[in-house]
Length: 316
Image (cartoon, rainbow, N blue to C red; front, side):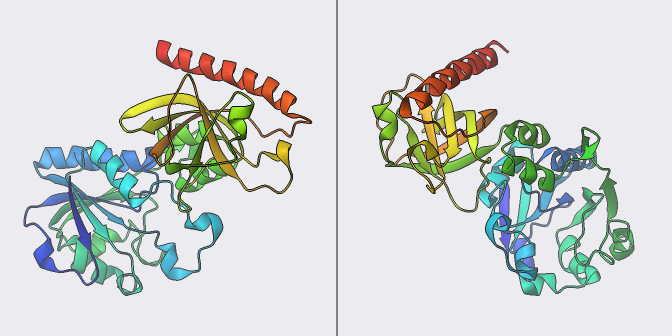
């Protein structure tokens, strides 16, 4: 997949001369609704014998319009992961635009002339709620007028789950609530996060459940506090286990949130490893136990549930 990184104003020398069907969107998470847009664009590109291109952005457009704090700074898919997802969906070319104040200042007609036409678009495809400027003047309904017959426009209808719109907003809310099962269903795949294994308090090994402490990037979403089944990728190998997002408040109050994973039947030194976590299923919420013994009893139950879960996954 070819990735063309663009900073406004566009240098036309960056753009290949061949025509494309262009799918447009920020595509945070590349969820099932986004996938429907890209699949439709792929179908059109195949029928027209042209390449499938995607126009997307290197950071959230909201950054240009208002201060972002806390969860607003997090992504369901960082630019690198988004590119990986687009590649898997068969995209041939990505125009990765840096969304700046100067870029945002373009009027809709300027955006169309400066970018969509310059990309040699034969058909522009986006979701029904996609905008490319101010919401009242930059809708998909108005795009054909700006196109002025130079390219076709196709709008993809709303994709729903449980009769509700599938959206990045819904997925973020599910993640915050610790409902990784719903998040995965809306994404259409198992959510992944990244990190590096660092030293923790080493308390897990003293109670028979050593953990890999995963230091995660601040700009990636994590499921809310709770215990989950997951897999950890080390190098090219995936290891199943159970993972906790929590404060370990059995051992004290007001502790920081940590991400700690116990791998099933793993022996080795993981310190310093860059890893991926694939989040599968929520087992339970966080519980404050009266003693370490009570925690150990619960961890044994969690281990049994985790082994049963992955045995079922293997059987399916």
